[in-house]
Structures are given as C-alpha cells and as structure tokens.
Length: 224
Ligand code: ADP
Ligand code: ADP
Image (tube, rainbow, N blue to C red; front, side, top):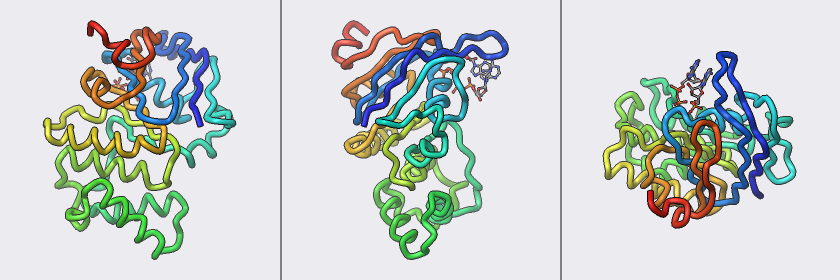
C-alpha cells in the first residue's frame, strides 16, 4: 500500500502559500521529509492526517481517497504531532489504556495485552506505573509512539520528534522508528539532516511549500 500525493496546494487566509503543487509517492518503510522551519512540513502532515483540507490536489492510500474518507483514514493512521498534551497525573499504562479504548478495544483483557505489548515495544515497561508528568522528553516521545501504534496503523506520521532529545534518547527513538517502519509507512518530518540520512531509504526535501528533491538519501543529500 503506497501513499500518493498529487498536486497539493494550500494558501492560508493570511496569504501564506504553505503548499505549492506538492506531489510525492511514499512507499512502505521510513520516509524522511526534510526542510527548514516554515517549509510546509506540518501543513503537509496535517493534510495527510485529514486535520486540514488543501485548496487543490489529491491523496490516496492504496485504494482509499484520503481527503474524502477522514474516518477510515484515522483508523489507518497514527499521528504524533510536534506537541501533544498528556494529563500529567496519569500513569503511562492509564494513558495507553485510554487510547486503546478510543481505538475500539472494548474488552479489558485484550486491552491489557495490547498495552503490555506496547509498553515493551517502546521500552517503557519499567515506567508503566509512573505519572507521565515526570517523564523525560525522550520517554514522552516514546509514549507518543506507543499511542500512535495503539490501533496498529498502516501509516504513521511523526512531526519533528527529535527536537530537544539528548543524543542517546535521540538514537533510541530513531531506532524505534526504524523498527516500526519495517511493516508500515512511517513519515518522519524533520529539519535535522542526520535523522534522515541514517534511517530513511527514501526522502524528499521541501522548501517554501515545494518539493525540491526526492529520492534516496545518497543521491538527494550528495553535497549537503
Ligand atoms: P514547517 O512545519 O515546515 O515549519 P508549516 O507548515 O508549519 O511549516 O508552515 C508553513 C508556512 O505556513 C509558514 O510560513 C507558517 O507560518 C505558515 N502557516 C502554518 N500554519 C498556518 C496557519 N494556520 N495560518 C497561517 N499560516 C500558517
Ligand atoms: P510548525 O513549525 O510545527 O508548523 P508552528 O509554530 O508553525 O509549528 O505552528 C503551530 C500552530 O500555529 C499550528 O497550528 C499552525 O497552523 C499555526 N500557525 C503557524 N504559523 C501561523 C501563522 N502565520 N498564522 C496563523 N497560525 C499559524
């Protein structure tokens, strides 16, 4: 299942043209979307996640018309925005239990199994009873990935996830992404060249709302 973005444009009411005829084909695996602040990355991510509408253009995921199927898309999608709020007093397992419920896991034993597996996968099993308000930035991001994974999505979108992480947490987080990217489309939006170079078999550079280059990092980043 491939994500196909065709001729996407978006001008905000203030006149900023955030997306300017963006076309991209995104196959399963890790896909890096690299660009400076203000390039249009978040606008593109929010559009794919059906959180905002473009002025023109189409997006398909396999047979699905993404822009006309918001409910279906949200079942297939895990979205980790740049900033996400968590009730600080809840424990990691309570947070995950809540999101697993939202994803339709109504039976408590099944939910327990899913929550346990997710905590293991993102390496937070030891912190499961701790209040998330006391989590480090890296722990919060890993919990965010567990939340995004709760419905076993086919497509995961991660917006600027390594900002503010120390080097060891960053390394750990990126490896987690590479692992989950083996079975799904994972779009990693970032302004950090090394995040993409190290992990993404395919990538694009976006600037001023336009795709400047797309392909394999060895070609795209030659000379960067
Ligand atoms: P990036 O994620 O690459 O930093 P954005 O998509 O957030 O880029 O922003 C692209 C451009 O659109 C920027 O100039 C930004 O200020 C502008 N922009 C983003 N969101 C809005 C909005 N809701 N209303 C008006 N302008 C916006
Ligand atoms: P990012 O760089 O990740 O897009 P921003 O700080 O640009 O983060 O955006 C944060 C929020 O503010 C988003 O919801 C975005 O739509 C909105 N926003 C960004 N730029 C503008 C703008 N120029 N006018 C109005 N809203 C904006």
